[in-house]
Length: 222
Image (cartoon, rainbow, N blue to C red; front, side, top):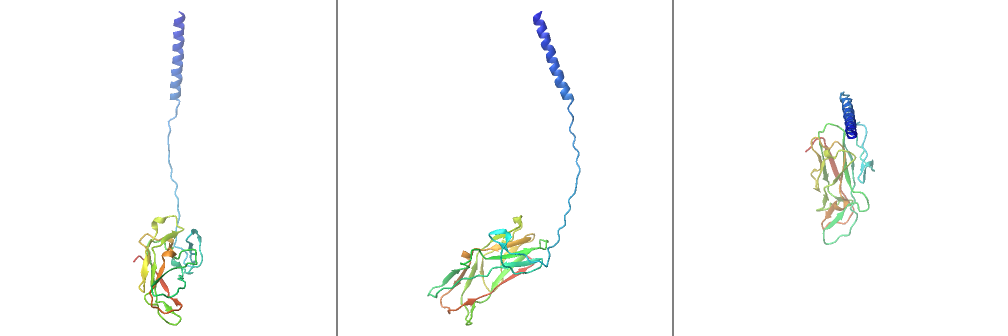
C-alpha cells in the first residue's frame, strides 16, 4: 500500500511538470517585424575655380607640403619640383648625376581634378636644351625620370592615375595618365631622387648650365 502511494505521488509530480512546460510554451509571443524606409540626400558640385590646391607632402599626404604653382581652376598642376644635379669635374668619361642630393624629399608632380566628371586627364613633360651663361649648349645630355609612386590624401585609391618612367626629350611625353573615371581628386607622382638621373657625355664645355622642363596638363586621356 505504501509503495502504491509513492507511485501515485510521482505520477502527480510528473503531470504537474508537463503541465507547467505546456503552459509556458502556450504563453510565448510570435515575433513580428515591420520595416520602414528613410532617405538620405547629398549634392556634389564642381570645386571652386578660384582656389589653388596645396602640394601634398609625399611623406605625410594628409598634410600640405611646401611651394606650389598657385594655379586655379577645376583641373590644375599644383606643384612640380625643381631639379639640382650639383657640380662635377670634367673627365674623359661620361658622368651620371643624381638629383637633389641636398634635399630630403623626392621630387613630385601633382595634379588636382575638381571637375567631378571622371573625364580623365594627361600630364606630359618635355625638356629644353641645356644652355650655359656663355651660350654653350650641353651636347648629348639625357634626363631620366623613374616610374613614380602615387601619393594622395584620397581614401579611394582605386581611381589613381598611372605613372610612367621617361627619358625626357624635346617632345612632350606622358608621365601621369588618368583614364576615364580615374584621377578624381589630388594625386602626386613622387619619383625617387636617387633614380632621377642626368647623363652628361664627355667633351662638353665647362660652365653653369640650365634647362627648362615644360609640364602640360590636358583635360582628357591621351
